[in-house]
Length: 338
Image (cartoon, rainbow, N blue to C red; front, side):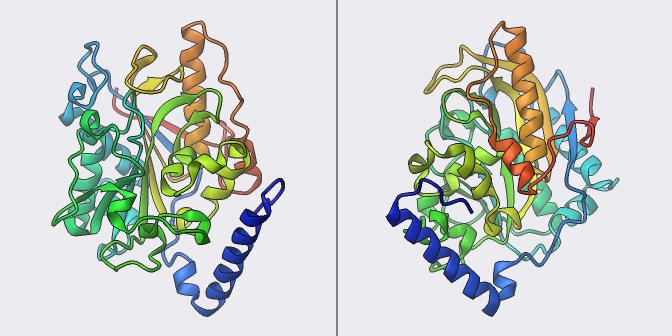
């Protein structure tokens, strides 16, 4: 990791965390490393489009989505991504051990655009068809600000769990880069420890911060101190997604691109939210983010708006770190349902 320009206290905390992780990786290698590496080549990316995914109204919320169409898009995308003709076989490729717990990271921080429940539901159904128990599925974000608009209902009891990180053990104080305990499994009940991770970001620009907010930025909700990493966001995003608890547990990334916020506005403001009716599926955070960036820039050009600022150079840095590919010629883009 890069420690340049860090405060002394933060440097010591990170150093101590790395020392502990290094010691534990030697003593308990099965804890620190994923036991189920994906057989699917990184960089493979499936883009699905269906003009009937949303209702064509001026609404940009979960209620404006066609549930049946979304289900077909996600199911066909998962099969195309894995190369399987059977949906259960496809999810078996993604989730090798159905006894394990699965965390689904959504983005419900902003009311204007967010991950929508009708996009997530086919993922839940696929996991259950695979044999994952409903009690072993946790949908989470740092805040529940947009749950009302996104269609999520909080639940910390039996069945599929939905809530904030604080509902599922909270965050570490200083070790493990302040990660959510449901990802690390440290010092919390096994009721919340997750072995697999599915990332479901939404497509939005983030002018003034990272340029775009996609799969890598979505994990700012997986740490307890995101505001400490706005100034170093271009380096920290790649570092965060290189942490084994995120990198090695991630089995699938499903980008909710039904709508796009092509010009950043905070709060309940949908003036700059437009319709794309797309879903993008990969296991490569760089491929997803580079493709999402291109989609945002295309929309901004259509609207007569200049490129996002700052340029999301964290994507190039992630490539240099070996987290994935941003070369469109190497990305397998498969247009699905038309």
